[in-house]
Length: 229
Image 1 (cartoon, rainbow, N blue to C red):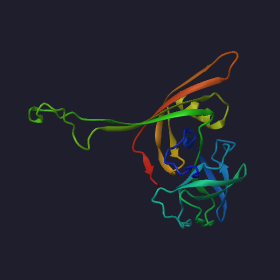
Image 2: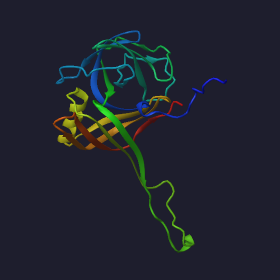
Image 3: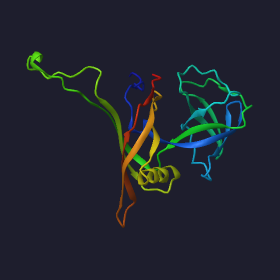
């Protein structure tokens, strides 16, 4: 009897992740171990988990990030959480060590953490084409190549929660503000990241069941796409 085929290209739903960004400061660096602090007026950091992602938004003149082959902007995964404020990181595509020069007093960063309470999510690319059908089209609909409006839409459902990341998303929806979201295909470490308008959050619940929510968001501006497969 042959061995089971465990090498599969298919991706499970749990390998599709939605994360929301939090502004953090890297206070100290020892090798690949980072100590983080929240950016005021926030008083606490969000709950950080292995597999979350960090990028360095503002690298000072005295700070260098080395040993990375990934094209800019560079994203690094959280390899381990040593404490609520201390993490170790590595490159997305392997365990290659990175080194940060700790001369800078602090380093502004974006930390992407799980969108709280989410159970299921849907992502869709859309392109609104430009119809250029005319008398020379021989009665076939013709679209203008490389033109039209592109967008990336997200929707999802989950358990209503007081998780800090979800409450931040709810706040940004209420206040009609943009925020940054990240969609990750875990198996391939493929990333889609950019600014989004959270267009709706609907909360519901029955007296004998959990509170739930549904949300939708639409991209604003160009996405950053990192293909690692």
